[in-house]
Image (cartoon, rainbow, N blue to C red; front, side, top):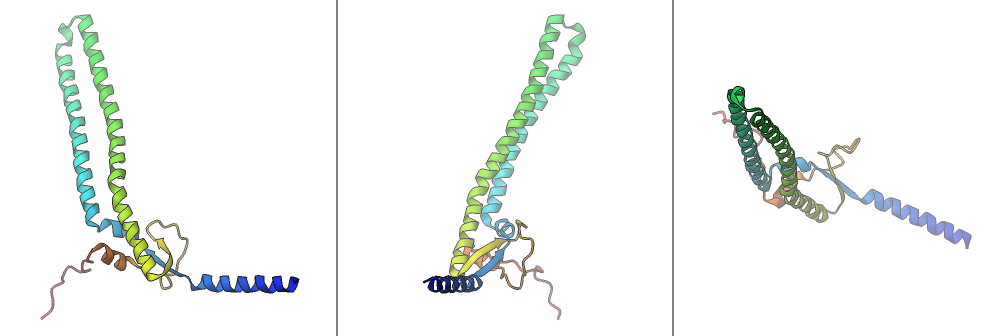
Length: 182
């Protein structure tokens, strides 16, 4: 009975080791894939517009502060003490409002960036998964993450072209139509 268990365990180890070597692996640069997606370009445009709106609002607060500061500096000699203190408090409040808005705007920008990027990244990941399943790959490594200490490019095929094709992205020629010699 012990011999049967030992033989069975040895057989299982041999079969599982053989299956491990039979697995197919691939690589892809997700950053490269995402950067050529039309959705990514649209995301960047939307994010730039959002950032521009935030910047314009910050500039409005800054202009308001500069105008009130110039008025204060111009007229402070003739102001009553209570008016001068009130204007100083008003300037401090504007500075605080500017700093707070800047902090909130930065946070909003980061959140908007993540919100806009998520569907783009999800679409790219789904395309990689689809290509991997169709190609029978057990794992696809993202080379843009640089989390692999080493991989042999000859043993890990790059499936970027297949993923781009799945996404409907056409590769642009390396040299933009170099003039042909006559």
